[in-house]
Image (tube, rainbow, N blue to C red; front, side, top):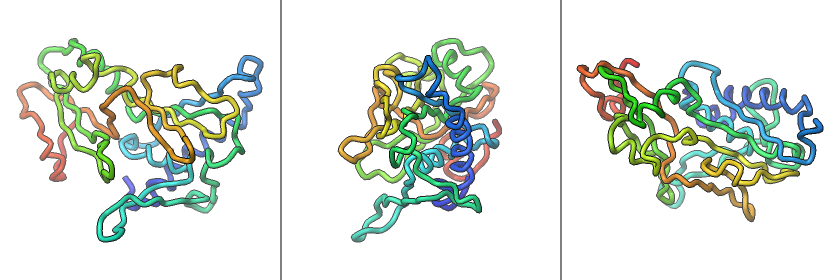
Length: 248
């Protein structure tokens, strides 16, 4: 993961998202007979490098809106401060802000998930009661902190068969739609109805303010899933906060 905020929001990951989305837009899918006059949406996931999925979400946001965020001291206290950009980093100087104006009104939204992985395929059924014997499945990561003014996520480390983990969602198990996010283009020619993906998190603009609507109280910013033999010592959150490595 890059250490500089500018690189996180506008660096290599953002450029890769930009080029991938640009290649799709160049194909004029929105002009096809079965698409014309309807919302046109592109779904994208990040597989650019090992573990890149735990930090590249910010790169997509930086590219789509031409804006990132960093922590700065304002009036004596730490606050999140906007970090705008007109171009991505690097010699290509690729323009940032796909959704910053009406240049691509044909694209209604971008769907993204930071959990589009093999781990998702076994967490859902195992959290629903299908755990095989002899193994332990632990998920570590950061919850989205909904406290106004929060500057970081809330670390967690949970056995996915535990009542605490299952209780994070109203289904009583991890749903397929958890971590699905829809980033709406405020200039879309044909906006996407929220009802089309009712359980996704929807990022949209209202009166110039970017808002988020979600049916789940729990949102996970990033995570990793660890598989252990059940006779091994269960990992604790301190193992990760202290910088220690636990084998996956």
